[in-house]
Image 1: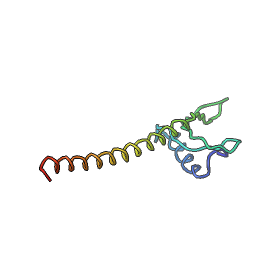
Image 2 (image 1 turned 135 degrees about the horizontal axis):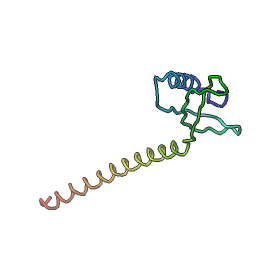
Image 3 (image 1 turned 90 degrees about the horizontal axis):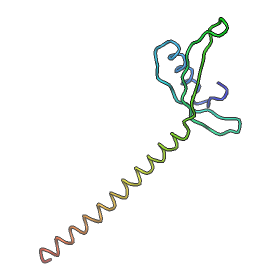
Image 4 (image 1 turned 90 degrees about the vertical axis):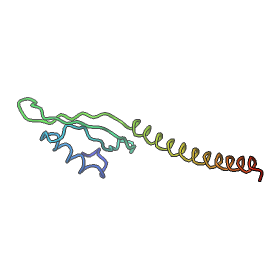
Length: 106
């Protein structure tokens, strides 16, 4: 838990317990901090195992930082496309109104 970002420690604890009890089968996401202080997003799954005759927990996780960055970039791109299309639609509406006025002789 020492590498888990403090904002996510309770989430990780609850998610791991739910997964170990069989209540949840879905991997969970959270942030970790590496030894250089960089933040990474990870997706983790835990399971109960027997190791040397004793109960233990096996956890494995995948770094999904790039996936989160791509989602942020796509979100930004979507907002930008929406803004551009709105502005373009406004220009075309103005041109359409002007053409109407010209056609009707005003």
